[in-house]
Image (tube, rainbow, N blue to C red; front, side):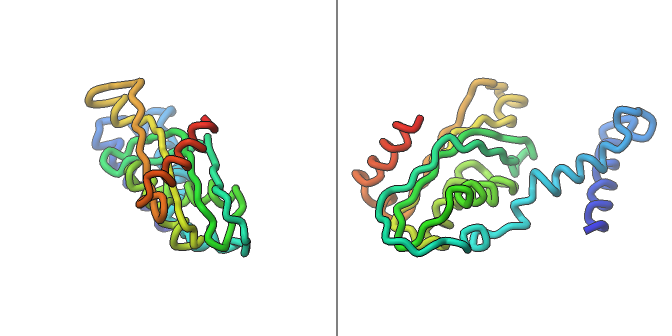
Length: 190
């Protein structure tokens, strides 16, 4: 991956120069293109190196039918429109359909999609759909509460604005009463 990181660092160096910044003479900017390239590749966008199938591959057979809800999971992502960060809390859950997975795998699944260029609405849907497809869940739900730098640092500059999205699949997408049970459980965890 050396060529890719070199290309990204060169592009970042050209970007900083195009903005009129003294990237070659300011000691504070020395190494910035390389550091930024590494951060984008290894941290911000490492979700492209993972697949939901691999993350959920170690699911175990189970006869459990009870709802699983994991609340207060921190996440961070990057907006595909402005390349600015968003961060927040996620609550995700599912109704097992014969297989269960460790709680850490749920966090990894969220990060698999969050560490890509993705809108918050899309992120929730992708996680819910992956739980259905790769875990065989009977229902899946994701509630995301995020703060977006594209809302707080530019445009309207709403520093306290929080975006809440809800995504449901399976039984929770179709049955309002069943969905309410998930939302009530998520609310009790809050």
